[in-house]
Each structure stands twice: as C-alpha cells, then as structure tokens.
Amino acid sequence: MTDYTEQRAEIFKEIYGVSKQSDILEMFENDYNRFKNKGFTKLQELYRDYSYAIFFMYSPSSIRNNLVKFKNVIKANGGKYQANALEYFTVDNVYAPIKRKDEDLKKELQEKVRLGESKTIEPKILIDQILSLKKELDEKSYFVANNQTEEQVRAYRILAMLGLATGRRFTELMKSLKISKHGKKVIFDGLLKGNSEAIEGHLIALEYSEVKEYLKELRTFAKTKNMTEDEVNKKYARVFNNAMARLGFGKVKDLRHNYSVAGSQLFHKEGETITETITRILGHKTVLPSALNYT
Image 1 (cartoon, rainbow, N blue to C red):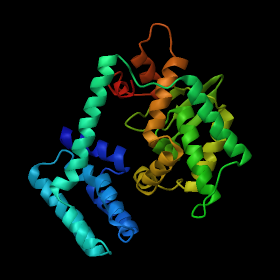
Image 2 (image 1 turned 60 degrees about the vertical axis):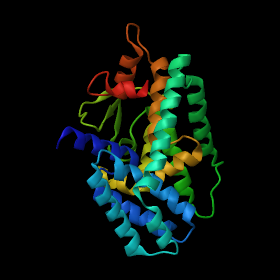
Image 3 (image 1 turned 30 degrees about the vertical axis):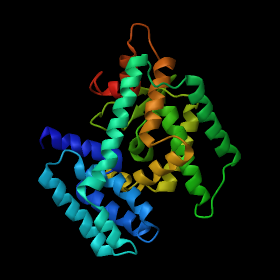
Image 4 (image 1 turned 45 degrees about the horizontal axis):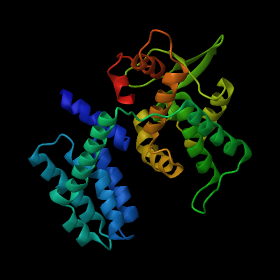
C-alpha cells in the first residue's frame, strides 16, 4: 500500500474501529436501519458521523463514487425519510460540518498558541475519576436503564476505568493485553500497532490484582477470546465510544490521552523530556513522533 492509503486506514480505524470501506458501509447500513424511521435530524447526525469515510484523502471522482455507495445503501433499505435522506446526501451538505469543525479547531489551536496554554489533566483529577468508577463498581451504585443490562453498564465503566489506569488501547484491553508481575514491576505484553515487545507497565490508582480481575470481567462480558482484533473493533468500538461519551469521557482514545498527560507527571524520570516520558509509558515502538499527538 502507498503511504496515504496506510494513513487513511489508520485514521478510519481510530474513528470507526475498522479500516476497510466495505466494513464501514456495513456499519452504516446497520446504523441507518436503526435511525431511518426516527426523524430526519437523527439521519443528518448519522451522515456527519460517516462523512469522514467519504472525504478523507479521496479524489473528487472518488468522493462522487463513495456518495453513490452510501446512497445505494439508503435506497436498498427504504425508511420513512428515505427521499429526504437522498436529497440531503450531497457533497455540499456532507462536507459542511467537516469544514466548520476544521475551522473551529484552527481557531482553538491559534488561541492556545497565543495564550501559551496546553490542554492538561491533573493527576489528582484522573485518580479521583478512577477511584470514583471503582467505587461505583464495587458498591453497584450505578444506574441501569430499561434498555440496558447490568453487565453492559459494568463493562462500560470497567473499560473507562482501565483505560484511565493503564493507558492501553481499546483492543488491547478488550482482547490482546497480557499483564504479569515481575518482582515489583508490572509487565504489559500483547501490545498492538506493530509493537511486539513487552514493556514495563505503569498503573494509576489501581493495583495489579484489581486490573487482572476487571480485565477478566470485561472480556467475559464481551466474549472476545476467540475473536480477531478486527472483529472486536467492528462489533464493539462504536458501542463503547458512545458509552464513553455518555459517561463524560469523550471517546475511548481520550482515556489514553488523559492517562498520558497525567502519567507524564506521575512517572517522569530525571533527564527525560515530557515527550520522552509519554513515549516510554505508552510503549511506542518509534520514539518521540507518535507521542507528540498526546502532548
């Protein structure tokens, strides 16, 4: 694959949990069928969610072809608002939210540079968040809605708590991460993104035994033992991202970001730059550049 194709696949996986457009179209079809009779505003929101898959690094001719593919999904599945959806699903309408978002982001970054500020989270705040989630789990003091099971509610909170406490990626927590203890050190193995080497793990606010216990409960709920990494992402990434938003944590990747910022203060070694500390605790195989995303 060319470099831009690899980058596009990586971006898609971060946003949608899958890297292939065919899988994204399947996800869109499932979501369209959920919302096709629930009001046009819901469908507009859905199209904005999927607009990245249409526009990211595509040529103008490819954009038109992609629109046709998404429109064909709408045509095949009908719905009360089908005609409005087809009329709305145009280059101008779908691109507008992306353009606005980009302009807002540019202004935000310019303001941060002007003020010399950076987005951060204090270790104490992160620790309080982790311990609050643990208390809810231990005391079963969470609310279970009519359309949820207790196992679902617990799984969402466990994922949030472990993401903040370990800094590990979504699929690592759901499937691949192996955690062990060598003396006083905690070891993380089963890392993704091409990193096959075990690293020293740095836990925030949770004990090794607690992480092991909650990982087991999370994976038992999700039944990921015999699933591939792509299957885990395809089935659960969107669901858990929505759950993180409801819990006030943004998306799953924001958990890793907050861990890295707080961890850069908690686990900093003398002589290291902040970027070097983040690189080390996140376990990036390629040093420094990747960690810049978290500073």
